[in-house]
Length: 538
Image (cartoon, rainbow, N blue to C red; front, side):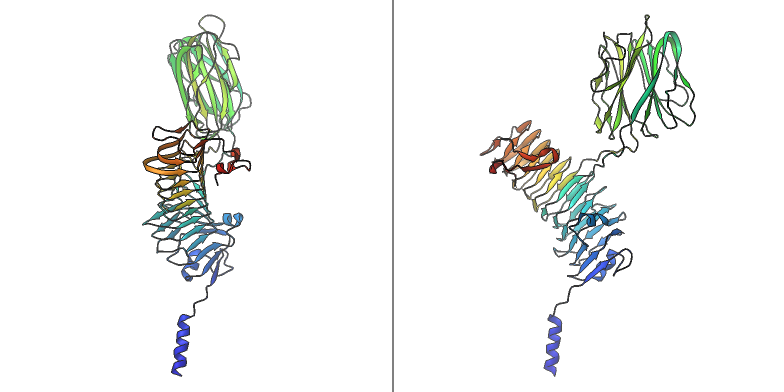
């Protein structure tokens, strides 16, 4: 009897526990309504399946060797609709020595008010097939030699790193900058009204443009011969730019229309002079802050030049405006190249006239507008002004983002589309990645770099340290191909401004040949079938 009991006890201790599956559903139809409750109840080897829904909670694995998964990690619609979000801490935390059997897969993970949407501390878990949206912090942050395996994720970036201080393998992920595309068009110019004062006067009355309704934007331009003294706008108008230069004075003002507007507006100045003015009607602007940026320049020449002004949002309407001494113009002509003309006219035909004009152009991107020059028929003193009108629901460009920062595992098969650093300060083997659009494709590496495709980067690879091996890569359409110290061989260079800086040169088997990308215009940088095998990036 004692022997039988002993045998039964031995069997009890050696028979493994059967893994369980727990289902989380926000509607309470299954085992748990929160993810954390299911994790806390589970044990090693278990699976927690999460049904679609938005789970507003911070999740901690707490050392569990479990699989936390959506109902189908391979279904992008399921992944997109199974959301874990938190603004009170990191969204998902691994900080209890989790290993590769702790798996996070199939979720959209967003939020966090602390470094790391997914936070990894001294752990070596698995993160796969998720969409991780980082807005204020790095998407995945490691600490104390964290070595997670990060694979097959889509990582959205907004001014931070995609993966930072993680030293496990980083495989087959897609890194994208979150550049929310504009949902509204640029503001629209409609019509203008004008007025002329051909004899000495101290005011000019300009009619309201037809069709003006509440919240429309009116932009007025007043050009006065000589020195106007003090140029004043009617009540409710705001000065954008105002200057006096030798033989001409020019002011630009704006007003967002109220519920009731007068039929005309009177602008005045202190010295009796001729004047030409007009008011433009614009819609589709930001009613609170309609003027994004402006700039002013002045000189004497036959080309009144409106200066460059750096816009801060997408899809501004750019107004180019000038005022000039005298009447050396072609009426309704001489507009800057690439613009649509609004008006070019003068105050009169006698002596002591002045002239002015405006044109417009939409600018889809944010950044410098560049200069734009009107054409006069003779050299005169002039003032050139550029004004950018902010669109409704203006979209601000994403800050610069880095895909992988300080990673020492194996970096393989990733597609990286960022605007700052593709891979930064890494001792890893870097192989079979596509990096596009970065300021630096790979910066300060310390490991082998092979079989990568780097396109449209300002600098393909920059290495200021000891010489490293760079072979079998394609570097195309860069300002600088290689900068620094390399043992480079069998690489393909194409369309770069400079292939090498002063510290490096072509190595054994390096070639200058079209890599024959399959469809570079649409981001397909694989090689077409007819490309020689030696040129294929993969």
